[in-house]
Image (cartoon, rainbow, N blue to C red; front, top):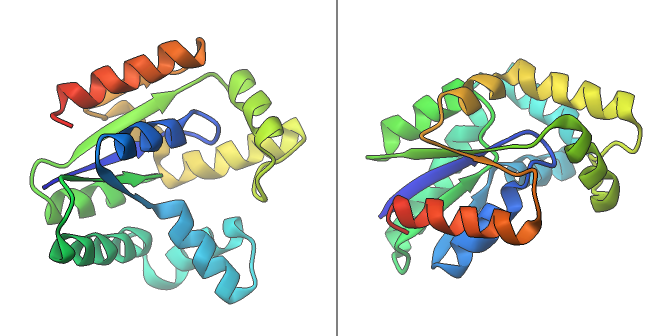
Length: 179
């Protein structure tokens, strides 16, 4: 079973990769959802929880929780691939590579102006509606090491054109890696 990851800064288009992978039979495991679930239990914001989890349990904690979830899914069978959405740090990549043979990282890039406009439309709880808040969130993500993850990816997709072209590029990339 192929296990792969997708990374990118907020608003880059990671969820579209997940949607297309799902259409092709993959199960999606979102690291952001794992953090959001934990934030809800703690009564914290997702940003606080992401930082606090790493401070309390080390930089590998979110990936450890994700690996456990994936291994449980593998035991249950019934899937040809699992896509991990939201990988943000080199230690997380290391954890996945240690646990899953041939682990592949796909990263999505879009410039900040495009991503900010997308987040303003999306309006999820952790999406800032002002540029200063958006920039601060990017700085936090970059502090986790996401820039290194993106720069060392196995595949990179640029998402700065129309949605139809982007979806086609995702399909092409997933076919190249056997999904």
